[in-house]
Length: 227
Image 1 (cartoon, one colour):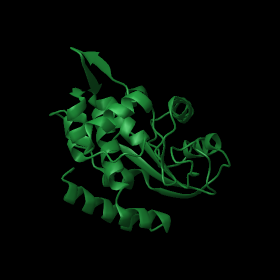
Image 2: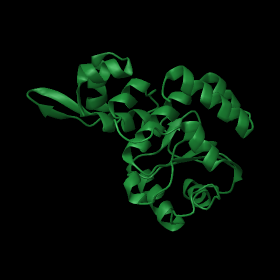
Image 3: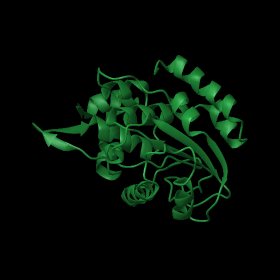
Image 4: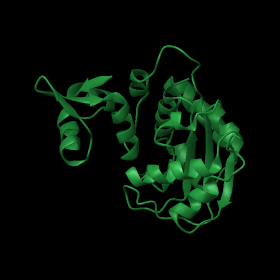
């Protein structure tokens, strides 16, 4: 769906001049139609996530299709699990280690997944700031496997440089694996929303156990109406 600048600004709760500045100076893609800029809603959601801008449930709703079951962030993380002490001293080494973790669904080719993750980082860093990265294949359709949405929470053995937007090294990664574009967008939107929650951030920083993190995600899902 294409959005006018005013519509995009309303969804992200910013001034329309700010959206125009993003187009001019920050690489937000837009095209002209009848003398006005139009922004693809999917690209807006991806761009906002990459630049550490909170993606509200309303933008997720714009990108949602009416058919198919709705994906759930807590359920996806319960499948992928939490992984401590992931080895690697560089971004590529950590991603190589992540691609071998047991939480990745068995049908996914690990070597192909790693190449997709590295290719995605070449387009733009998935380091969203505050020491967190969300590596994911650029297009979930490339996975071409029938698996449920899966999310892995990974803590590297030591912080690594991801060329994040705020320059901070990454100490926590969420590997996102989705079988469809719709699931991919839902997961990105829900995760972006959750990562702006101060209690959840504190839980991640102290490496709280997985059941506690899942409980907080379920609370956020209920209060945000994204379930």
